Length: 332
Ligand SMILES: N=C(N)NCCCC[C@H](N)C(=O)O
Ligand SMILES: O=C(O)CCC(=O)C(=O)O
Ligand SMILES: [Fe+2]
Image 1: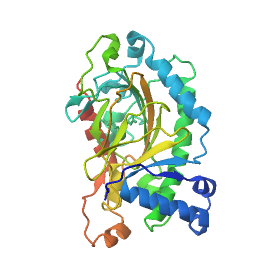
Image 2 (image 1 turned 90 degrees about the vertical axis):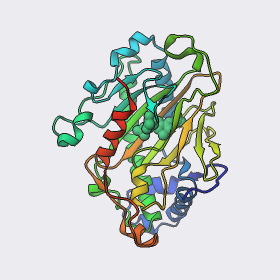
Image 3 (image 1 turned 90 degrees about the horizontal axis):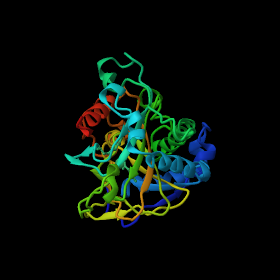
Image 4 (image 1 turned 60 degrees about the vertical axis):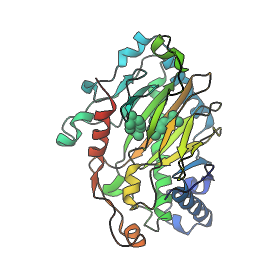
C-alpha cells in the first residue's frame, strides 16, 4: 500500500547488478540489503531511483540527445514515421494525439514495441503486429535505441530478481511463462514548452498537462529523464503530488499493473503524471519491462498467503490489458 511518502527513495543496486546472474544470489549479504530496500520502496511508494545500475551515463545522455534532435525536426519530417493502426501503433504521434482519461496529453512521442510477427499471438496480438518505425534522422537513432533496449531489458530482469526475493519467492518467479520472454515498450517522449505545440502558437493554460494521471501497465518502468527539469509527479496516499526531482545518472523506476496483481496488492502501481511548467522543452525516454505477451497473470501464492488468503484480483492476460489501453489511447 502506498504511504504518505514525501520523497522517492534512492537505491544503489550495484551488488544486484554484479551478482544478478549468480544462482546463489539470495545468499549474498550485499544483495540482501538491496532486496530489503527494494521491498521497502515498493511497499511505501511504488517508485524508487536506482544508481549503480551499470548503464553508462554517456549512453543515457546520448539517448536523450538523439530524441531531442528528432523532436526538433520539422513536423512534416516527423510525420514520415507516423503511428497508425496499420503500423501496429508503432511510430510518431503529434502533441495532443495521445489521450489519458479522455484528455489530450501535451506531449509528442515515438512508440516502439517488441516485434510481433503476423499470427504470433493469434487474435490477441493482431493490433500490435508490425515493425518499429525508426527515423532516418538522426542517423544513429535506431542503433542507439536498440542497444539501449537490450541493456534496459537485461537490467530490468535483474531488478525483477531482486523484487522476487523481496517477496520471499524464488529468484526466477518472474521468468518462464510469466516474463521469461518479456514484452517491452519504449516511449521516446517530448514535452513542449506548451505555447509551441505542433509548430503553432498556443496559449499556455494552468491545465496544460504533459501526461495525465495514470498507472503503467506491466511490471517495471525505467525512466530516463532530463537532468535539469522537474516535471514528473507521483501521488502519495494523502493525494499529494510528490515531484520526482531529476537525479543525474539514475533511472526513476516504478511498478506497473501486472506487478500489483502478482503481489495481490502488496505492491501497488502508483499514479503519476507529468507537468512541464519549465520554459524548456523536456525529453524523457521511458522503457517498460512487461510480462510475456500471452501470460495469464494472477496473484503469487506467497503473496496471497501473506495478505489473508484470498485473491484480490482476477487473472489478467497481459497482452489483452496492453491492447485495451493502446486502443483507447488514440483517436484516429
Ligand atoms: N505503456 C505505457 N505505460 N504508457 C503510459 C502512457 C500513459 C498515458 C496513456 N495515455 C494512458 O492513458 O495510459
Ligand atoms: O515523462 C515522464 O517522466 C514519465 C512518462 C510516463 O509516465 C509514461 O510514459 O508512462
Ligand atoms: Fe507512466
